[in-house]
Length: 131
Image (cartoon, rainbow, N blue to C red; front, side, top):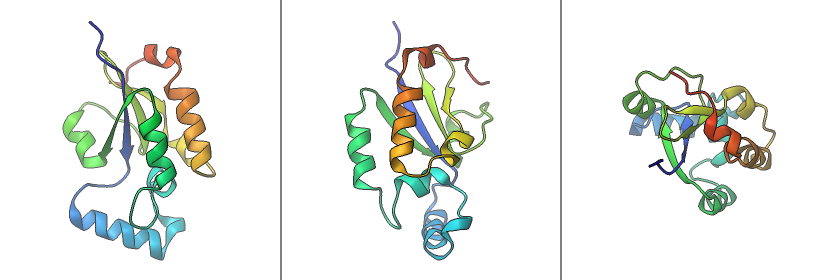
């Protein structure tokens, strides 16, 4: 029996409190040099953008959000440039949005369109796993 597909959004940031506080300050003080494009698109200074939350709730697949350190714990063998969006099925996770695609988004609408086009299409459920 095939497991329910899941999208895993991985931020290029760590999950500990110190990292979260310094990341928030960095986004405010120097947004052009902040390294997590996924964070910049989906979050304001302190919280997730409402339009992003609404979009995620409406998706037909389960979504999970991980930070860099959590990805290493859950998938230690996976080597990908962050941020990234992964599709997890019965096989190993496969990349449906890489860091370059996320970096190329000029706004949240671009990101949401890419998620719809590249992560929800049937051919991506058969993508090659990354080991």
